[in-house]
Image 1 (cartoon, rainbow, N blue to C red):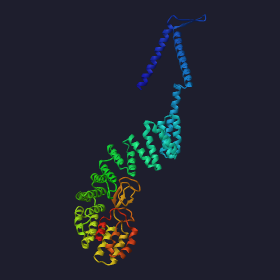
Image 2 (image 1 turned 45 degrees about the vertical axis):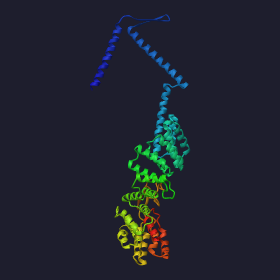
Image 3 (image 1 turned 135 degrees about the vertical axis):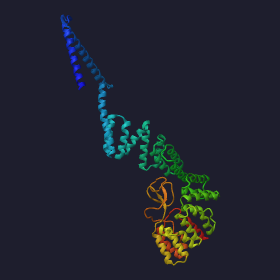
Image 4 (image 1 turned 90 degrees about the horizontal axis):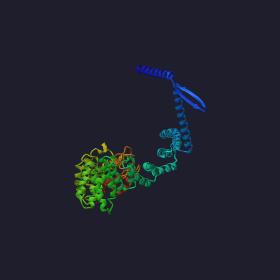
Length: 492
């Protein structure tokens, strides 16, 4: 209110001053005389002031018209002028609108519409660094891989967008199944952006699939340095890669470097069962039985496993059945109530023909954890104690339809593997295999058939029973660790 009143007062004061000035000019004597072509014009004081103001206005208008004419000539000549900038602003406004519409169409999954909008934005904006990526992604979505590849190649030539171009071509090669080229591109992309987590994961997966264990360990170190991988996970996966690099250490003629890598894998992750078993075999090959025993005991204390039992048995391959039972007691003391401990000790006691003790050690596993292995052991115990064929066959019949127990199971796709591997053979995931019981019933097992000579007692009966069991035989890795011991002692 006060501000409005103040503005009114100022306006009235200005009008009063102008009126006062005009009155003074009218009362002032004299003026200006102008002679033009013999004609004399006499202007009073007020008229002179008005004429001066009109003259200044005319000069200003003339200069503006002259500058407009010059700008028009420059515009027609192609120079950058106010007129060109005006039209450029309009075109730029339309281009950014087309770019925004293209991004929305891309997010909505409308590939063709996104492609059309991106093309229009490219024509209006003339800024490929903004529109090329949208065009490439729209082309990928609409299925025009050739157009997308052309745009990605243009992006590679620009230093500021080189990473985007390399990553885009890498994605295309992955979708085409060209993993070798994709791996090389992933290495280049990681060199450009070492902290890019997606590229790190893709490269690690591709290197593991290609069995490039040295390169994979380098990528894993990069993940640790950039903070995209916790240290404890790094240690385990580094152990997995070292174990994979060791290769088939159990095969005859394994090199010293392979043995050292197996030992290093166990050092990096002592609880990794395959690493412990492989390191133990490496020490056995070197004649260091005590070191092998210590490694296996340490791993058994964390997770009893058939592979560990098999490696522990191979430390003293010439011992008797009774000696083996006594030596395996060292493992049993570490995890006395574990299911695997009880199963292994029961198998060894059956080989030693101590059937009452085997029954005691097995306990109620055939009820609390009735898998095929426990039920087969019960059949062996019944046969050893002289039970009738009907009783033995009853246990075998239950074993045929029972769950097969823990397996090497992929945590990602739940695929069952016959042996441990660093990469899932089904979904190609890295370091996802764990020793667990499948949720769904499986149809394969490595247990049962090896014990038939002990259970049936004659070759004819063994052949008749094998025909039924072979249909559901599992190929579980290491499940025959103690059973292999049984077979060896039976031969003795």
